[in-house]
Amino acid sequence: MSQTSNQREEQPALDIKSASLYALRVVLRTSRLSDLQAALAQRMRDAGSFFENEPVVIDASALEEPLDWAALAQELRSHKLHPIGAVAPDEQRDAASAAGLPSVELAKAVPRPTATPAPEHDIPPVAAPPAAGSASATAAPAKGGSAAQAAPAAAQGKAAAAQGKAAKGGTSRPAQPSPAPEHPAVAPAAMVISRPLRSGQRVYARDTDLIVIGVVSQGAEVIADGNIHVYGPLRGKAMAGARGDTSARIFTTELDPELLAIAGVYRVIETRLEPALHGKPGIVQLEGESLRIVPVEA
Image (spheres, helix red, strand yellow):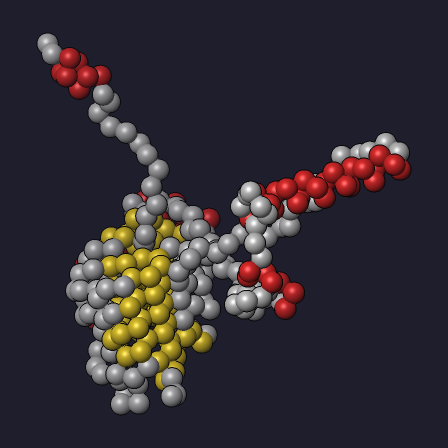
């Protein structure tokens, strides 16, 4: 038997590894199955094929009445959604589990720190370039050495003078290094895409903003945990605040989207926007539980 065959036999038949899974959350506000069926059918008609074949977690944490879990799971599957678990009160977990929906815990949305202008004293100084002919611009290096060599020599001279003064006054002590100033962690830079996005392409900017320089075509998707900026026609789907940031916004120079979403609140654009918005620069923001599209006045 070859060495390769022995290695294959020694390898385990499977491995178990951790993974992160993106899933939709269906939040229930009633336990009446007929109402849920009607609402689900309407939402899926509005979204077209956007949510098809996505995994779903059923969130019944706000319900007090019992729920027909099996019937609801079957209804979701009939719309090409795949229920994988449930969030439910303690008294309903056994019923959900019996319907094949294990109890899951949803991670809470991580709030992004609010960006504010830095105070005046924190603005780094920007030195102006020395004027031609000035002393600093024309200073010649010491004879026999370069300017780079002269600087360390001057520093050594100052250090020696400081030691001499310390010796006259008594026992010298080594200089204590000054503590390094504390700076907050630098936020991740925005993701910049400098090309058009074609139908079927998807770009996700995790923990930061997304900037697209070019057209986002129909069928393309741009997703960001922060804001989305599209410098070009937005004709596809744009989802800002993907992990729950309700302050996120969508900016574009030309509004013609298929779908807009912020922090899970979405709006499907089935027909053209009103003339004051269609093809114009605009901002999309979340106000309460609805999206508002604001034109940008020149």
